[in-house]
Image (cartoon, rainbow, N blue to C red; front, side, top):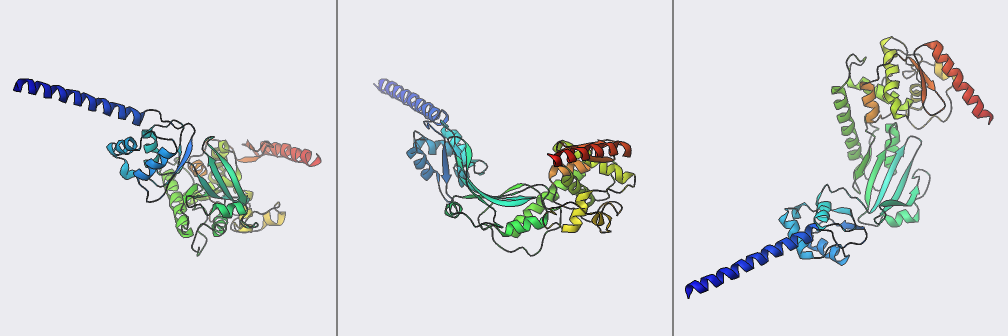
Length: 384
């Protein structure tokens, strides 16, 4: 009899184990397989939220088939403690595992509304945009120049969104004065800026910021990033460059940044100036002269006068020998790398070629021909 009871118990146990194994396999398939979401959505995870609340929200929006499996699967994967606040785009038919990865990953928001202060050489604006999750594209809600325009109603209303994200995008070639003036007008930042940072030492980049972040703290982040970029580029520099310090390389990088907007030309332009320094020739570059006039406070807005080209100032490279005393703008990584790894050329001259780029020359005679072609292009355009 006991043998029969033991045999029956063993049979039941095996059936139960098989049932549990089948249930686990089914749950795993539910967790890792395609989900029921028919169209991509934007999932907002508020600060201080938890997986129970997120699971309920996802279930209500038709993104997951089981709150329980979602929570257990995340717990089994060891990811429940990694929940990040933010707004995350959830793809159509995303699995529960993929959703968990999205909300416990880097924490970088991938959808929702965003305010972006965009600092450019010729102007600054504030852009409010929102991601359309189904089409995965941003839709502009409002745009204005904080220096000359009042904030539109759409922007004021959008600022009430507690999940709103903020960004400051700094273009290559802007000056430190321009950056500070722009930051002063960003109503989502706080604090005073006691002095304009040293020219050249702010890294052009798109920075995610927090609402209410101190302006001085953001400027410090910009400086730390530029210091890192310069140190890395200096360590990987070419041999025999005519710079004694990283600071001199930064000055050259700022000149390269202002001289060309064509990425493919940066190393060639850098080679021209390096070649001139090696030969003891004056750099003779207009952007340095302009900086000596404006001190980086905006654009000149006109051509240089002959008297300005002849005036002896620390930044007039038609008069002084070598590099100017400081950078003339904040160069990007590519210009810094170009200054420290210039192309190997024999070029000593360049002039605009009418296409947005430049014509380079090894001799003065060749350069004069290029200049004549450029002046002919200018005259033709003026006559149209």
